[in-house]
Image 1 (tube, rainbow, N blue to C red):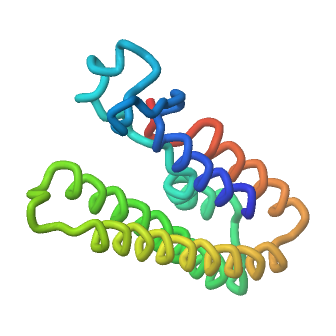
Image 2: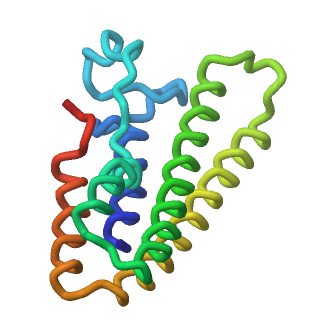
Amino acid sequence: MVALFASAIAASAHAQYGGRPRERGDTGSMRSARPDDASTRGTTQPLFDPVAAVERELPSLRMDLKLTADQAPLFDSFERQVRNAAEAERLRARHLSAFRTGDASTVTAEFVIAAIADDDSERADAARLARERMTALYAALTPDQRKQFDRRIIQSLREPLGSS
């Protein structure tokens, strides 16, 4: 799970620059090192959110694990926290979109940075709680269930549902 959430952070940092190196020009403004940047500037590619990918996998995983009565509440708690973490990222994306397209005359830099920090903190808190819930669930699973759980979580990252 730690690797999953670390990849979310790395994906966010990678997406910030679109995977391309950037240079600082003489005027102090940022410009792309690639000349075709102007043609792609208007298009926004959806970012891969690994927590959302896991979230989409959980309903079918629940059925396939054939949870016992004791395991079901632990799975529910884990699923709820994964949903909270994914929702925190969706909220962050909505905030960033509003900053890009909204009226910038009334927004201060302090407000923007504070909003980003608050959104990231909410996401991190939800991810930590998801990890705690997953640890409790994992301890209650049988060895075969653990193997299936591991395989499906990794599969959700490699072949996310709803990506085709």
